[in-house]
Image (tube, rainbow, N blue to C red; front, side, top):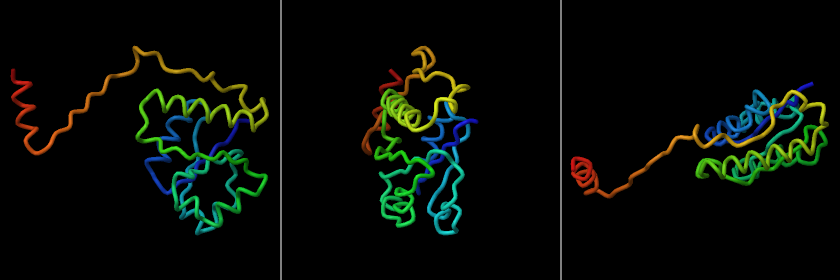
Amino acid sequence: MKARIGVISSSNVQKNLIAELLKPIFGEITQYDLSHVANGEFSSTGVHVLIVDFSDEAVADSPEVLEMLDRDDPLIVLNEAEIYPMCEDTRLGWRNKTVAAIQRLLPESMFSNSPPVEAPKKEHLQDLWVIGSSCGGPQAIREYFAE
């Protein structure tokens, strides 16, 4: 049996980043938001482990989510970090820490087909440059690159 992982957050960016980081290890990640709580789908998630985004105040203040913390099923991993502002290395560190927490909660048999967690090789990472400026900056940047 393969581990089924879910995440709840009202932020689509946060849910998608968490799913993107964990999908290579666990496969598809089920995503929930507060609409699932309101319509009752959330009370029986069908996942083994649920990542609860406590950096999201709406989720942290939800009585239904707080009630789920007291249950034995699914197992809960709390996330208090906002993933979007993290640099790539910090995101990989977050992923490795989260994977280790999930692996501690579940039987080893659920991970027999999972690839080992490792950081991507540096030659596969792309450099990203961001240049910010105030209102006079675009012209200065054009002049700079024209030179």
